Length: 233
Image (cartoon, rainbow, N blue to C red; front, side, top):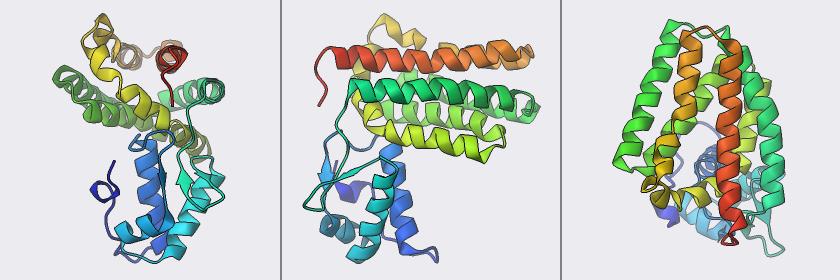
């Protein structure tokens, strides 16, 4: 990916470091970078139209969150894919995300449920169109609408960090999604989201939690399946 296609010059009153950090973080969590992809401080500083210092500090923050590795030469590198690391990430996701869903269940009103339905509709339209970027965005929006509804920022921030560390795996999976859209798996993309909506409408908290759990399991298994093929970088 060309850096210039993703990043914008920083201009607002927020600190330059925060703006650089936010843009890099968003790019990482959305799967904009491939595993093993590297970029230097000078290159990023040029794209952000800023000095080296805020870029360096933003990269250090992301490295502290295990979203990046900093090489001995100072180059920032997206971590390589690792099946054991993916397993560990998913183990924690399977604890936190169903928990967030359960907490959110009692707090979601009709307006919020309607918002989830709209996000699910957008997701389905993206699947039908084969628009992978839109699919990923809609999926993430659906999940975090639920997590945010928990009104527990400690919990939602932990989940967001796990998604941040999953960014390269999201990219890896998205690169293989085209073939899945041509297979029978296509109908599975939103099945658990459908179940979550049905659970909310039926006021079935256990079903809602279980659907979230199964959704994470499905993603875990799909990525692991491709990793087991030995094509990971």
